[in-house]
Image (cartoon, rainbow, N blue to C red):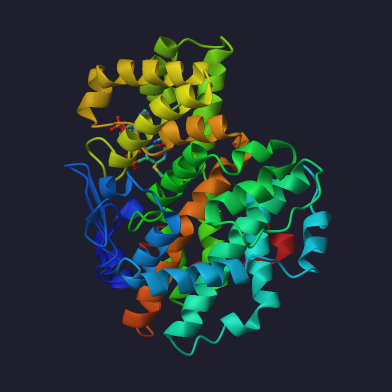
Length: 403
Ligand code: ACO
């Protein structure tokens, strides 16, 4: 039994909040969420207002610098992105050293860390211009790394970035120019991908962003902090859920289980199965991003001439879950991952790249938080406490006297 007086004597009074559901770790001016009402705003702007003319680069600037870019700022930032798109030639050897089967998230995290070795100029950020260049360099190079990781995984040669192309078309170019060149300039695909990326761009203190802030609080550089964010994002309860959703839909499509039985299984605690792409720590209502992505899926797939049975299965699962008291009582609704994979699949992005796409999208948010923290938090390192539950003081036993 725990002697609470003894515990307090050892640790003092500590708030215990597993999963930090009620703990604020910082003040932030970047993103506002009202989970009860299903509201998400970037720097005050409702997320829905980005749907008509989606531009990921503008949103990146908005999140990082606090306002929509004026034309000069947009041009400078776009020029920075173009100028920094290439990787150092010797970085290619690192790609070639990975086995073909290497998970792209592992490559992404490793290569972001490796960037630190090639760009020491991004370590000492003297002023805001230095930071802007480092931020643009990271956003641009992560896109190139992501495309190279994919090319490496299928044994195709790298494609150099094309300075004439904008952010999203350039990514599609580096991914698919051979043999999928027609995707590169399709405005519908470009807009869908811009929207997916910008809808992932920030979501306040989620697991990966908190990780970036935690690592950054030790004054680790921007690249190291964001590489840690990639690792946090990888898990299936966070960014990895978009892959898990597709696997769930495939399983149903292949007839291994019916949608009704899957939902039944997800309600059974002992099964350890969850309805992937459902539920959210903050939203107790529809995730507004899921609503927007459902609309994109409905428009994009027929226009591209894609009939994906997985979309029908997703719709069916949603219909069943939304009428089921288990999900209603627990306020579990589709989250951003529920439809994003179906759209990425229609564009031709392979499933093992889904979480990488999330990382490309989330990067401006990580950068914005890293900068906000370094500007406002001073030298306060993040260092939570714990409640110690181990044995009381005990003696070391020499190896020969142990059982
Ligand atoms: N399917 C079935 N039951 C669920 C689900 C789900 N997807 N999500 C939550 N529940 C149930 C839990 O079993 C629990 O039930 P109980 O009260 O009977 O014990 C209750 O709802 C609360 O669940 P928690 O895990 O405590 O909720 P939490 O806020 O910690 O978790 C999370 C949120 C991780 C997103 C969870 O809903 C989940 O695992 N969803 C599936 C994975 C997923 O889609 N992740 C992506 C999240 S969004 C993002 O990262 C971009």
